[in-house]
Length: 77
Image (cartoon, rainbow, N blue to C red; front, side):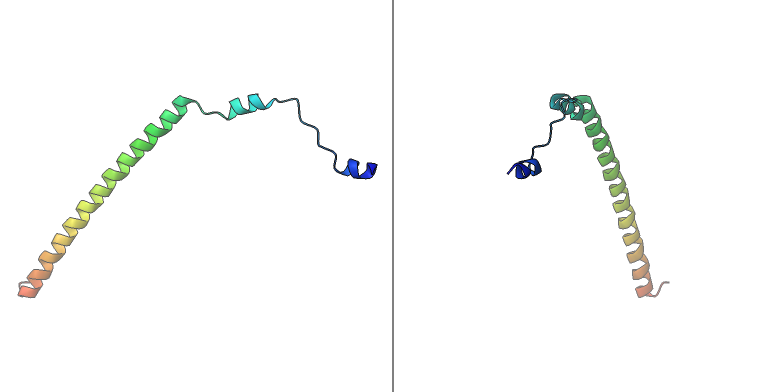
């Protein structure tokens, strides 16, 4: 019976570092979160502006294509 108890003995708890201090280390400050949100918001604005620019370029190329296509159909090119 004692052999069984030795096998399933509980492991000792590490008392050198309390859990509360570890939790404090893992916390993120509010200013860090705000900075991340601002950075994310700025990045999203940049991506939206780039997407709008690309859409404008696509629309212009589409217009140019149809102009050339219609001129070719009319036999002017």
